[in-house]
Length: 122
Image (cartoon, rainbow, N blue to C red; front, side, top):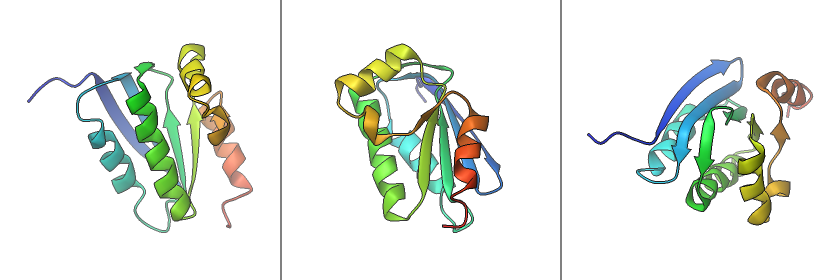
C-alpha cells in the first residue's frame, strides 16, 4: 500500500463529528477522505461536522473540490459543516477559487462547537 500524503483522525463530541486532516491534500485517493467523512456522518444523531485543518500544510484545488462535495452532500441532509484552523495560505486558495463565502471558518474547535449550539435543535 502506498504512503498517503495525508492522515485522517476522527472523533465525536455529542452530535458533532470532528475530522482532522494532517499533511497535504493534493494527490492520491482523496475520495478516501470523502468516504471516511460521509461514513462518519451517517445517522440522525450526527448533525454537525468540523473539519480541522490546523495541521494541514497544503490543499490543492482538487482537495477543495472534495471539501465542497462533502458540504453539498451534508446540506442535502440538513447537516452543518465548519472549517477550523485554516492557515492564511490555505484560506487564500479558497479566496482565489471564489469559495471563501461558501464555508464557515472558525479559529478553533471550541468556537465552531459554540456556533452549533444554537442550531442543534434544527
